[in-house]
View 1 (cartoon, rainbow, N blue to C red):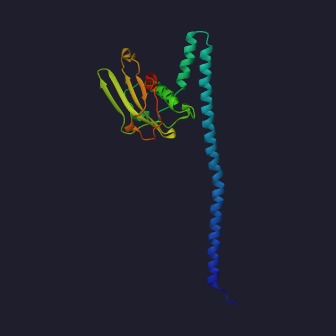
View 2 (view 1 turned 120 degrees about the horizontal axis):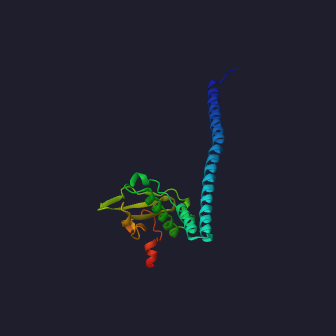
Length: 206
């Protein structure tokens, strides 16, 4: 009986391909659940943190309303304001000469402005606000810093223009509207127009 080595070689090649494919499938099955589990765990933790933060904000607002003294009410109110904060992720890479208190106040105003324009989720859940490259400007006139830059938020497809004034001389910081988060001009838009409003437009009834 003659052995057909040509056919035998073909069978070996096919068997090898089948074995290789089986190994790939097994690896995919083993690794896929682990990845999904990690992602689900991370998402769950983030969701829990957001819920806890929202509960704390609501609790401080309720306590402010129930406080027995104005001082106590103001303390609860200020703590609630502090928690209403949307971080600017690359702030330290761009902003200079301003104290940390100015950053906190600016991010509080950003929270309020986003809340005016986006209702699908609380602003405290937003974690991708960035200062647009090449938009940062700061001038010093006398003892007064004037700072401006653009903010982009990819997750909600919105942008805002920041105008900020600050002086190391405290008496010069008593002016209104030192922290302005404004709607972008048409030439500053990189996302679709979202019918933006801001504090200035609301006061003007626009």
